[in-house]
Image 1 (tube, helix red, strand yellow):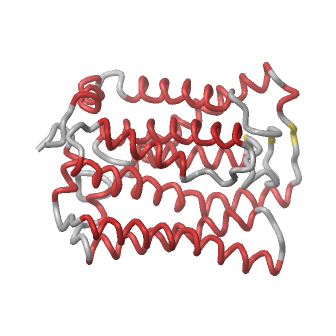
Image 2 (cartoon, rainbow, N blue to C red):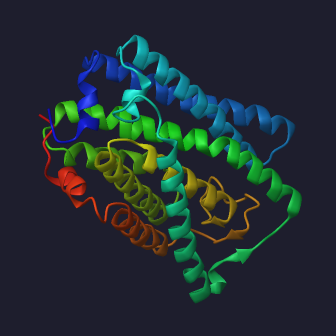
Image 3 (cartoon, rainbow, N blue to C red):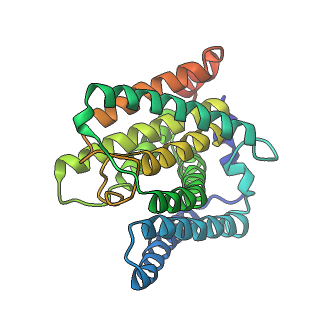
Length: 288
């Protein structure tokens, strides 16, 4: 047993390497094809950038269902073991993480906008914006919650069975999280910025998950971040560059990772100011 009970959850059930390979492959394919198929069908009726958000909602919902089934019947694990060390989801932690992250990222982005007003374009069209808000509120919570269960729950716990230092699963899943968010390889600089930004976010989510023994704080932060980036502060990502967001930046710049780093540090400091021992366990704990 380690000092990180969340990672110890992995020891329950069956953990043969081939089960992890099957589960990872099946879940990944369900996400890819579910999203692409949904977008393709929607585009035949109306080629709208919001279709991608709907596609993500459908694709990740299918992935979540499939992950539950494979965890239950192949791994013989309960889905809650990938969420926390208790018996039910801690909804208060989700809202706590979401509100805090939304406050921090909004404040920092507004400061940046005031310092660099030419870097953002204001655009407001009521009906497309309203549809964007509704679709985002329906789809992004599913997408973000699945990603936290999959990366910070399933994969980080799985890597914790292989590596003895807790930092290694944390780093591996953070980098993997960043790489899997690359939507285009046409621009190397933009690709590296996307990987850097999302890897920083993955590192943040992993740290608070291990320190809090559950994904809820991370899930709340993740949901809030995706909603803000789609609805209010679109950074010009290739996938979502045409969304009717409130403010749009022409392209992601080196400032974006800097904002995320500052917000991540403040997020951790505020949440764990009186829980420094929990943070130290993430750095020094072993999983054996």
